[in-house]
Length: 125
Length: 160
Image 1 (tube, rainbow over the protein chains, first blue to last red):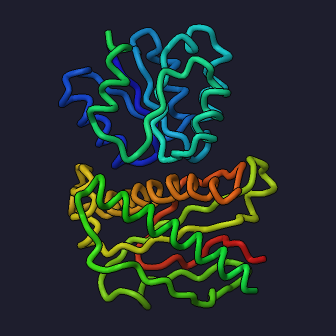
Image 2: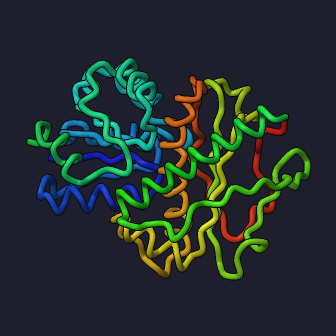
Image 3: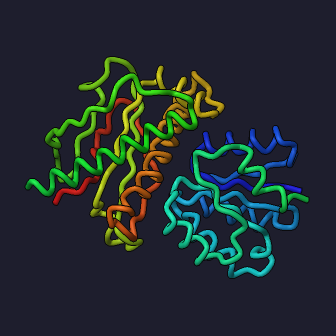
């Protein structure tokens, strides 16, 4: 099963990928640099994607707008999303959960790898 | 005027504390001394803030910028209420990002700029939480923009 990482920071995508690979959670990681690209990748590979790691602040389409778009498509909305964001305030987390009531997790950057892995484990097939 | 200076000082202290915590807790780095807070006039051209690293550093420097806006309105995107600019020398940037656990390639310019932007995003996101405590709610952050040594076209900043 594949994991999709959507983040405009190449460094953050690399770090997430390395963390996932080191934990042995997936051997196929898809990447996108913004929500628009992420949506395209998702629609092409949704049958194989078990989890999405999603940044918030991105150009073109941000994390919130991505989640709104995904929720309009039943097949896509079933895929769990964990938000991985530098926005650490409670208001930000409330906004994310208000946008997506089924949000699988909210990880604050900079994160400890163990915390990220623990959040991901329940959704890895 | 006194109230404005106090508010700015408070924001500066929050930003410094955010950076200190990121460095200490995630990179295991301690600052050699307390941060200095210096107030300087903004050099403006065509209502944009001029940005250059040459006044600060002698070596190649990455510069990253994130703006803060109120709400998601497109109209507001020309009028930020705050701007964070960070300057990091390339040599220091590699060490810092490696200490934060990032797999950075030293000889790749685009990765260096991305790394600076990633750091700026960490600071801005956590700074935004601090601003919420001061009553700045409904804040939106831009994505980061990174440059090498200077920003010719300048950056948006809260001109009022």
